Image 1 (cartoon, rainbow, N blue to C red):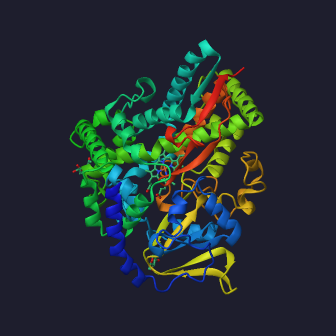
Image 2: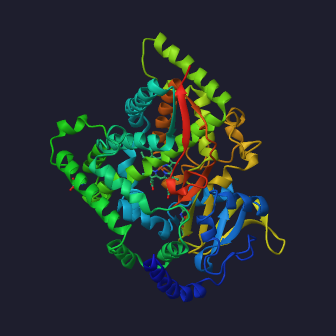
Image 3: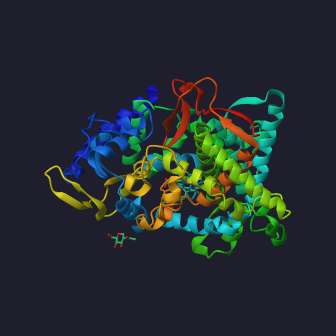
Length: 541
Ligand code: HEM
Ligand SMILES: *[C@@H]1O[C@H](CO)[C@@H](O)[C@H](O)[C@H]1NC(C)=O
Ligand SMILES: *[C@@H]1O[C@H](CO)[C@@H](O)[C@H](O)[C@H]1NC(C)=O
């Protein structure tokens, strides 16, 4: 840790002066909470808050839908839950608002130059090649895979339940293994062997170790060290990955393992292999390789970029879905009546499938399970894995507001001029608790609200699914949202039909901990367990 301290402080002194110089004009007339620290602003408080997003949700109640906070080194941050402002920045401004380096660079270290970390035109190139692999028909073809893995998980639980009748388990760990197996097979036809082997494949070992250091309540030194990345030129920053300390050593090892495996895939399926073999492969990588070979020269991906998509998809597509599903099952355990209604709906649909001589749900069947779909929407609303995202203005601009605010001098403001370099933060968790949009009792998990929400009354569409922002929005919105929704539908269908979910006998409190830029469930008072969500299951009657 002393290493981080040293590096952190050298970096601060270097950027402090530069910042003072460029932080002249700006958004000082916008109200907001007083800064608790000259050096950290609100940043440390935000990263270290007990319950993720509770600070933002409190500020929104106090200051209205747009307010000002402080980042590290005293930079002003424009924080908002305003639908029009968020729509402007995420959906209407192309690449004029970019990712923040301190947020993006860790992803770059893990995944390399893939779709999630590339900026501007490079990102457009990646997105174009990825697009065909995430079309609706293509994703529907993954449904049997989702059902097979969900069935396997369910078999494992049943084996154990025969002996005991009831079972206490860490639901998030099981789901994490299951979704890892799903993403491995769907993304690049790889068997992570997580459900069967407890993660004994080469890649899953490398991958698991990656996140050892991504701690709950990061130290102040680490927060500073990271924040300094925003002010270091990229070529210099890239040298960080060669640092001979963890997590960088582990990142290098994992990257080289993904690299080796990726090269093997390219040898087996790359441009030189005959077309016949390739046609039969349906995983995302095979589709990318095909898309790449038919693309014009300008939009092609090189080998390193293509291999980067493998790690990107693994990281982006696995624990996100597992954590959301875990929160859904936890809420269902806390709402047994809703759980029972959902189970009845699933069983009725199952009877129809059997009557027509089928055995598995189709995507149409799953979409007709209104109670399940609403439980997924409500869980995404109430437990957004990404509680919000920062963006940095590349150009001077004017941000429009749908909900005017009052300035420090009492003026009403309905648009905010910003300078290039202005940091913007959209609180998704806050937006998803605006009573005008989501109805009464926004602080409660209640899927039935979606029976009443009229999409016509919602703001001009924000987000990619149900006007929620949990998958972000616009040209950098989650490319895997539909994949994830179908996967969650398949899992809930299978698991609710077979099992009842209860809170554990021993009373524990579940906390939504900030973990990096996302959230993870942990048991209050026991952060040493890591991500943990204990539940008790029994066979459904
Ligand atoms: C509940 C599950 C999921 C949630 C909440 C979620 C959320 C998000 C969010 C908030 C972003 C934007 C990140 C940013 O701008 O920094 C994102 C991007 C992305 N997600 Fe997801 N995601 C989920 C599942 C998935 C799945 C299953 C996949 C892949 C199969 C996936 C692949 C991606 C990729 C590749 C990006 C980068 C897109 C780009 O930059 O163009 N995600 N996701
Ligand atoms: C990006 O900014 C430039 C310069 O301000 C502007 O001309 C352009 O229209 C913006 N792009 C989008 C998509 O808004
Ligand atoms: C993409 O296509 C080009 C041209 O066919 C090829 O040279 C390159 O190796 C391909 N990249 C991958 C990763 O297959």
